[in-house]
Image 1 (cartoon, rainbow, N blue to C red):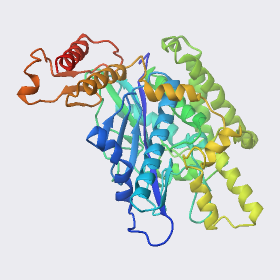
Image 2: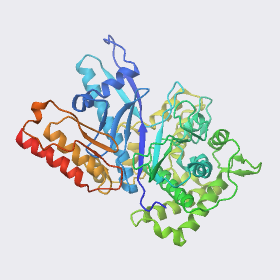
Image 3: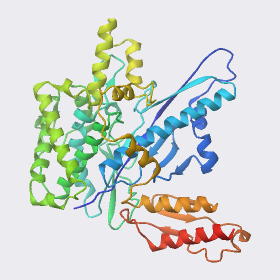
Image 4: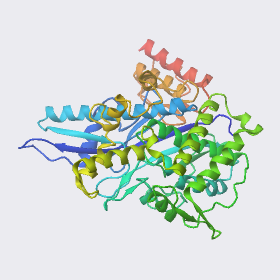
Amino acid sequence: MIIRRIRGLETEFGVLCVQRGEGQRRRLGADEVARQLFRSVVAWGKSSNVFLDNGGRLYLDVGSHPEYATAECDTFTDLIAQDRVGEILVQELAEQARERLADEGTEADIFVFKNNVDSHGNSYGCHENYLVSRDLDLADQAELLIPFLVTRQLYAGAGHLGPDGGFQLSQRAEHMWDPVSSATTRTRPMINTRDEPHADPARFRRLHVIVGDSNMSETVTWLKVTTADLVLRLIESGALLGDLTLDVPGRAIREVSHDLTGRAVLTLASGRTISALDVQRRFHAACQAFFETGDAEEISAADRPDLEAALELWGDVLDAFESDDLESFADRLDWVAKRRLLTQFAERHDLPWTDARLAELALRYHDIHPERGIVPTMVRRGAMRRLVTDAQVEQARAEPPATTRAHLRSRFLAAARAAGVEHSVDWVNLRILEQPARRWADAPSMSPRQVLLTDPFTTEDRRVDDLIDSLQQFEQDR
């Protein structure tokens, strides 16, 4: 069993440019808007794919989507704070692009949405990464995880207003097909099985979950990853949950999304049926029992308070489905908050749920702008709870997690930039790129030029120290 677990989130953002005024010099397509966002990144990073001082990664993904990947996090607080940093950074890029366009004669507003669908029916994701042991059989793992992932949208869904005016739990549910696949876009699986551990492949796997919604609520993001972590620990312990294998997971996930009561009846591979709520009850009860046994003693002290709190909130939400008291969670659950917002607006203006103004309001729920955005406004008014402070987010922006490999990557980046040396990094590599010989004439000690970091938990490495010492010596001798 993994005692400490590395976790990470990757979030793709939607971008919309609305030009103002008449006589504009040009119309901006999605590709150009995305390029405008990353002009400042390319200027300093010489690429639209860069690693940051806080250990995270900022890049322009396919489909003109800005994407931010958190650093390797082994605490849930670090993960939530790092995720918030991504919102701030992308919003700042949008503001810089707006100002740059204005200087060039194009007046426009650029909106950034933390959501999963656009008006053309395209979907983009929020991916979760969990470090697991190489010894864990991925097929067995996936078979147990799929029923959990299909039904966790009861609390993890971001809410979605369909084109027919029907309200659904999840934005991603309509776009999921295969339970597992090595592809990510062609079949849109719930779990991506491409073997990229970003660590020692003899010791680790990376469980890549791509079925989840992007969440505006910090509570939901936290509950999504803590409950998944609990279920993983349950699976790693060898616990048996009985018959929960779904007959057709792609159909089941849509059935759950369309039933806001949690009582969608799902067909199992055995022919039996079970409600979505009862599937979650089974997982919650098993995790509760696991946590109360000796096996749970292997959970790290840093994780234990979060996992205990998650078990309690998880149970409370399931109870609320039973008692039809979900409105009490409108300050924590995205889909409940969004449904309340749309309901109040529709009733106030006597609108049918197919009215375009409701669709616009549903989209605005995901606007990350700190002043204009609905959820940031709710937070300021105390109508949406937070789990991390502004100070924690600012620290996560400036510094990597202190207890993972990201700490070493950040040190190397700082030294390489200070020395003005061409370099490259990825999740496991720190590399000094080949330079003209004259640049190194006064720095013969520049060796080694590459370090491979295959242990994501390491925070000290003599090889990295040597690499940084060489960079600092070169800076002094330059």
